[in-house]
Image (tube, rainbow, N blue to C red; front, side):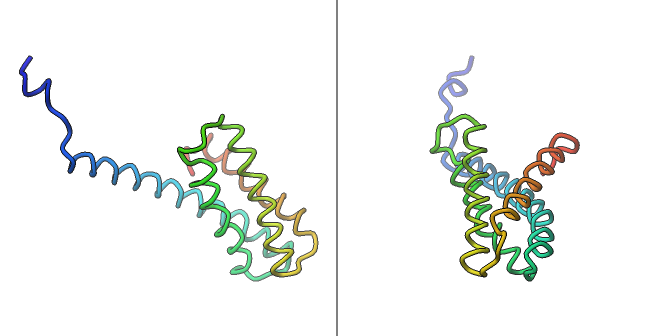
Length: 133
């Protein structure tokens, strides 16, 4: 084997390109899941809590990036199921608090549970059937 091939290492530019490509894929996956979540949760919140679409959008706009980039970030070494349960409980309680504390919505705890359970279960079903989000 040629010594140049054996001793070759990726250039810093090649490493940067790989890193950029992986970050781009992660952001695309997140954005796809974010849009899917909003399509499910916003109508539920808007109808059930009698709030505007913008207020309804705000709940997941706050929690979704935290769920994806904190709970499922590389620094937390836990089983997938543990991360999933922790992330969903966080999203449920944070979104309920958002509606109750900021907008005085009664039954926010119930509807946050319904909205998050709906987006999670439909997201899992969609991923299984169609590969998205």
